[in-house]
Amino acid sequence: MPEHYDTPAPAPAPVSKPKREAKKLSDKQKADLNKHMEKSGLTGSEAKSHRMKMMSRMRNKNMSVKAAHKDITK
Image (cartoon, rainbow, N blue to C red; front, side, top):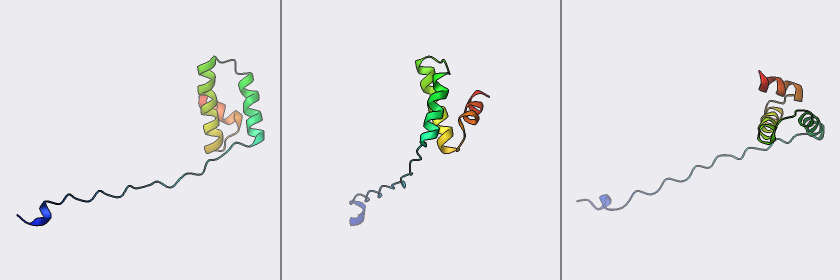
């Protein structure tokens, strides 16, 4: 039997993803979101879920509070 059959195959090199740069909310966006959340009247877990959805749309899709809320509630 040839000698190369006995040696294990080298492990493939791990593929690393390029790090995504985090987009931050501006101070105005934060203030608008806080104002929106104060008047939302949702329970704890509902409020957290709603806030996270709003933040995601405001950051990634560059939506306003009004547009993000409309997108979530449609």
